[in-house]
Image 1 (tube, protein in one colour):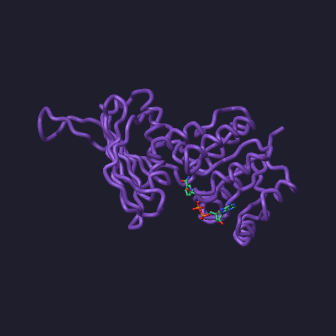
Image 2 (image 1 turned 90 degrees about the horizontal axis):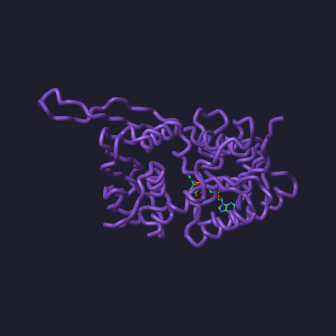
Image 3 (image 1 turned 30 degrees about the horizontal axis):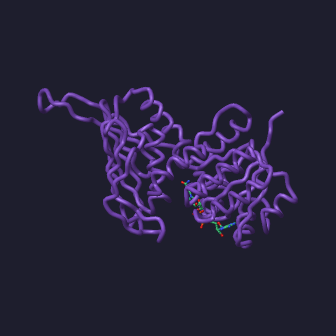
Length: 315
Ligand SMILES: NC(=O)c1ccc[n+]([C@@H]2O[C@H](COP(=O)([O-])OP(=O)(O)OC[C@H]3O[C@@H](n4cnc5c(N)ncnc54)[C@H](O)[C@@H]3O)[C@@H](O)[C@H]2O)c1
């Protein structure tokens, strides 16, 4: 018999409900991912703004609840999604951990402070409720493939890199830090060069020199993302250069080639540009949830991964 898991989404905002619609090709909302996947049944939404949850419920053909208590009183819920703004993650996660659910799918960052994150991790252990954190690129097959290539040393050792991002070091920069961690490029030190506040008063966008393992460096250029959005990484290995561009919708692979112009010189030549399925990351993430709940696999982004990121971002 196949298990079907009932889902409640807390936070009927952009990523919860409104980045897309049932007929969109892209899968950009939790609502779209869970209502598309046959292992899940989207029960409904809770939002502190009941108009928002009602509008979301209408769009996604499910129910709107006035409170989390109300939702649990009337339904058996297996999975809770926390998709409220960063500053409410702690409070809402703590509330959700009061209920006997099988898993919580939490938006990033896990919380705003390390103390809050440690408390959530302790509670999750005590209550035996696993939490998957949505560092979206971790779930995308093309990023998993790149991670495997790096781990199998197919590209050679890492020699250095740089990246661009903005909209807060914790809020958005944490995606970049997560990729470095995911590729086992462990960060030993962050030397901040400058700070700016492009989106949040309490979460600056930083430019910094990151000291990585084996005495290598990664230069992070903070960009004012109130002008435009940018998220890019440029990673140099002994045998290849990897450019993650267009927010991660493309990965460019460059390999070492003999120069056709200057005899004896070696250049980096673009071999392929892979289009990733980042537009479906939520579908891959919930596939990970389904496989985990069915006892087939581990979670691809755990609270331990999330707290490691926070230790770098909360400097
Ligand atoms: N993983 C990713 O790539 C990714 C992408 C976008 C957003 N996010 C994260 O998702 C979260 C939500 O972002 P968004 O852009 O959808 O925000 P949003 O402001 O569009 O929506 C948030 C919703 O939560 C509701 N809300 C606020 N506090 C609440 C509470 N205590 N209880 C119930 N509802 C509450 C608001 O009324 C609003 O409807 C953020 O933490 C953000 O970092 C992650």
